[in-house]
Length: 201
Length: 228
Image (cartoon, rainbow over all chains, first blue to last red):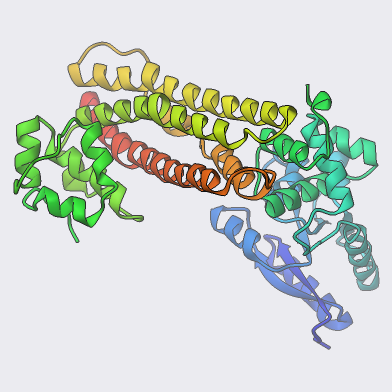
């Protein structure tokens, strides 16, 4: 049943009934387990969001107010890079749902839910979780773009990857080099011969 | 240890020698003999409460400014101190840092020098803009508040909201000097630049804390009194 290979899921869902339902699905089918439950997006929740060791998040976008809903996904991305699946309990505009890696409906059969969670997980695993201290080839490519002054959106389009993947790469670059600002990364890129001075003008 | 006006100033410096720069920025000369903090402050015309608050932030990492000190002293000397610090950073520290950095990168090739110089001047610009806002907007506002002159629509709350951090570029520079400059650069010079950056980083950090944890609550109190 609950073995170590099961994936940790953080629930951000205000409804206790929904939470119980998902816990039920997980305990019947295994593979996933609930690692934490947040009932809202408050300041204390933010701290837990940052620290929790989850492989996946299921969120009911009703926790965001109307204006925040269309950017809810990027809000989560500021704290963690894991896959985020939406739980659809009420009707919202299409653009709200499009941001998420998957959308679960409340009438989905348990196996369908598990399948959707798997899909969401595998879609995110392309993002490298590199533990190496050296920059990977892709990170170097992205660093060069950043040093040249390209925006995240432009980099995402160039390499045909999602904007969240770009953000993850940039976080990894900063974590490895200790350099946060674009100007600093430009100096780094030049000192390491990744760019020549002509391309930063 | 609680800092108090009755302790000897020499003992205070023994406790934290970084306070030497606080003394010079407040215009307190050395050679104070066995005099206490309170006595030296009185003879130099410095508010002892403000002095102790500044020393507290400088000495203890999690210093919480005591309410009685915040109440008993005014922001005049805090502003004076912050203003002096600004000119100390821009006129002394940054010039010295720039000169030693320039010497350090001598063996680098031209394009490397150019990009490092440009980075440094961007940092200087950022810091100067940051200080200029405080010098041109915040400090005149506090002075007007103190003298009861008219002051239009500004409040210290706006300062709190816009008080951005200015430590990212300096931190980047530290990493660049420590980790990424070519090995042709001299180690002794490199250490000198690094010591300087570490010192500046800490000093600027304390500077920000004095603004947020001493100046802001003092001005908040003045604003509340004015409303009554």
